[in-house]
Image 1 (cartoon, rainbow, N blue to C red):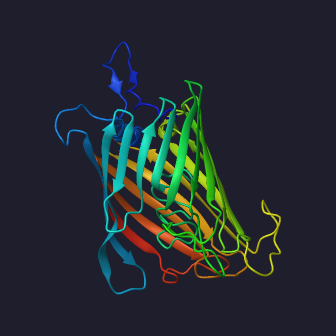
Image 2 (image 1 turned 180 degrees about the horizontal axis):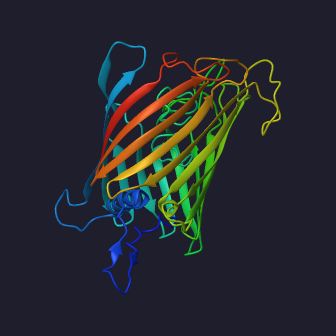
Length: 371
């Protein structure tokens, strides 16, 4: 495991000879809260104490509900945004199972901790790509339409993770995997993987996570696949991301801030004319996108969040409705495992002036529970 976010910083005291010490406002370290939740998940995966048939089972719940109003519509709705129940169980001291509970699970994995540094996985893997584990934020919001990648990306195959180095100054984790990959006839279906495959090739991917001084995290991801039945046409997807964790800048207010972002691109070969050049010698269609986020705790239970991003799903088409930029100011409130978000999502098309009703700005309140 790479070094986690810094622990919550203690209160600073300003003392004088004539007055009692005055305490700085205590704030919630949101990054530390996320790290604690991840650590809890790892503990469940690693195994619990024995004794009873269900002693080594644990559950992890992700649930969020939106109150959603889209400008230009004479209605607003409550709607589920995401709902995941994961069962995490220890089969043996070094063998763990994680299952997404659903009629059609997005992923399910068996993890074998071969050594403290090396683990192997098999099953329908949650693809380790990008800075986020479950949902991609390319575009500045969860990509529910899968304009860049599947909202939650899983595929059948095997993988391995190796903790190359784990120190106070430097941490490095490398992951590699092989999965069935995308398939299609005229163009690839970039979606959640299927147990069937249409050729001999497999999707190959890797991700590197680098942590520096416990304050800076860098992530690089790459994916390569041959998608057509003739084993001729390729697709590559790659991204770079960074996170600046709290405490990096020793300036009041800003020292609590967390900044993160990611840039990603895909190159897709198609039958016929492939006139563009990139990592692939030639390709037909390019996809691009990015996101950036600033999270600034301002009170014990509240943070300001600003997020922006853009997705261009087809660089050969101009001013498509799906070529969208997003700007989102938000207030984030945290109460234990429950997070409340109130946000205004400003949506614009590239190359056209902003209009509140086209394609439709969104005002939403979100309630997110992670346990």
